[in-house]
Length: 101
Image 1 (tube, rainbow, N blue to C red):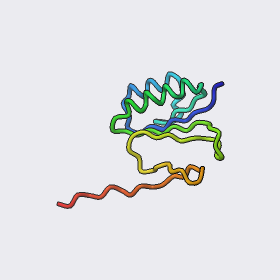
Image 2: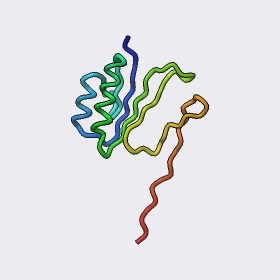
Image 3: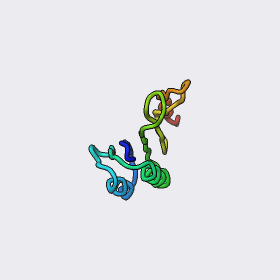
């Protein structure tokens, strides 16, 4: 049974955005929304993780959790999902330090 998914991307290759837009709608640059089966969702996410390169991506999909959804990430992000007693919270990583000359 299809369910709604949201995929947010940052600095990913154009061909990945094209692949995602075959199954979802790009409602704003880098934000893809669609209603797909779990199998299609997992295949799309596999394609994302294999080609994210130096960019980053985030997938939100329905799941049998207290919150009703699950979060998956790929690439380097400052916001990191952390499990806290069954709830997914977002932890902010520190900004990268500038190199001293």
